View 1 (cartoon, rainbow, N blue to C red):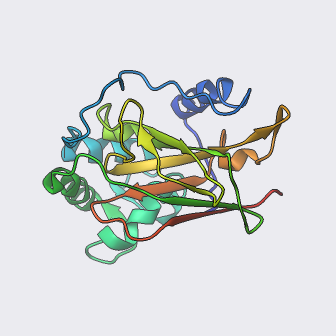
View 2 (cartoon, one colour):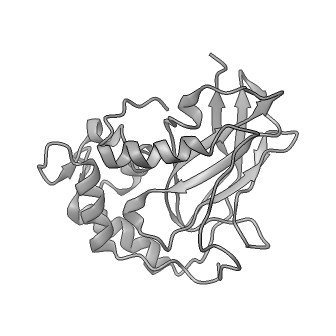
Length: 215
């Protein structure tokens, strides 16, 4: 799960703001407008608008496609490519993106339970905060979700204000952090400069592994 990032100024600003509130005393994530969410209803996503925004953000050469190199900057979409590349040309077209995002809407699913398994140097990592941060091209209705790993390194993230574990369907960046004695235990490629991504689809089977290294 390694990526090389070429951030636009907007992305730098976005992640800079995140970093300012990230590492002191553990993970501090501000999730606005998430009190008492109705997770029984699917978020309002416009497939056409989401596809346009994804291309605007990640189509570096402006050819109307998201190829393998460009998808390195969006690990969640990269994970989704194999299942949604309908013509098997190794890239997302606008039409494929629209069809892919339309699947979220057609599913009618309000939230999907996701089980993440986090290990550090092949050992379960307990007490780590895991945040699923939706890609901005999905719009404001797809909300972040988070949780803390148990003794087995497992976590079922939930949307803030929800009584039950579950996430909106969508494409996420994943940020994992743990501090001990005021010291950050994990490298920045897992949190403030994350290279981790996840697609939450209508069917989630098994545990999603995140195999981290301390160095």
